[in-house]
Image (cartoon, rainbow, N blue to C red; front, side, top):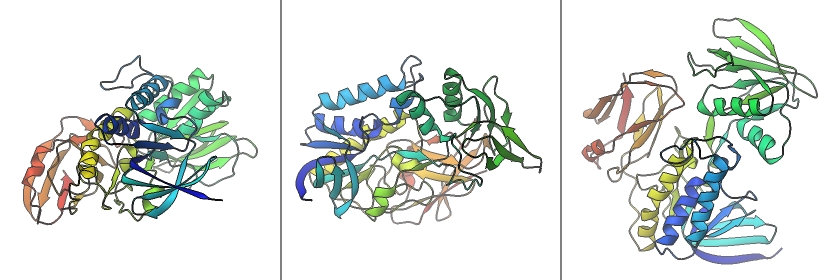
Length: 399
């Protein structure tokens, strides 16, 4: 099969909130041909399947995901973005050249700037190492939403939700609207936000799945050793997001061990000149508005790159200490101008955060509220001006 070679100015991989926002702003600013590739048949990303309110910035209770996605797509098209769906980027043929496949054939697309906006995915049952049979009725939240809203398929009669994050509660509400009883929510953490009418089991994990053909129950175990089986025909593994980093990995782009997404600086530049990364490709699940804001914020750096601004050296790394798990940006050649996002693996009651470099205190701040693992802390950027660009890594800790 012949391969077509083309050139564009900005190539965005992923038509979710982040990719569409960046593409729209770059195109409006005169970046040249801005092309967005989306492997799905419809653009808009995850919000297309989220039939609940609260989208936008600030969150609007009346704005549901599909409408939010339609607005983002319209804004990009109105700005002159070339939006192509059903096109999958399969690999790299050079530092700024992507190989793609679609029903129209194979292409090699070379860009002056490549933006990875590939989003995130939930870890399924297999990645969570839950043993047992492989019956029908085992889903992630994304699979549940697509099943209900894209294909109008029933979800079963009794469901168990694994996770107690905001996305878990959205999944429970979606099940209720479909006529499925949510019989329990489980979380390994000591606390979670319950949904009225749904029992919340904390410090509890799923240890096995039962059933052949269709799920009949899940085996669970509490941290104190108590165990049992909950009868159900559906289990939904929610949350536990991981950046969809496969394309970045194939391109040899440095990944951060904490986020497991591409390493970026405050301008969303990766360690590969000309390649940017934005949105949930960087850090897993943040609200759509946060991802879109990152896309908008990255556009000036993309435009600067097109005009020949040199690609900086990475600068000092930011290293969170346990129980902190990840932070973005990951290195700082220049001070940050936007809040830094930081997460922990365990709940943090009124945490006192501190930053040091080479033993020198840079910043500290106590957050007055309880912070669950499902929520990012937004660190103000001002203190990053005190970082020595020639110094060692910046250590983030909590007490």
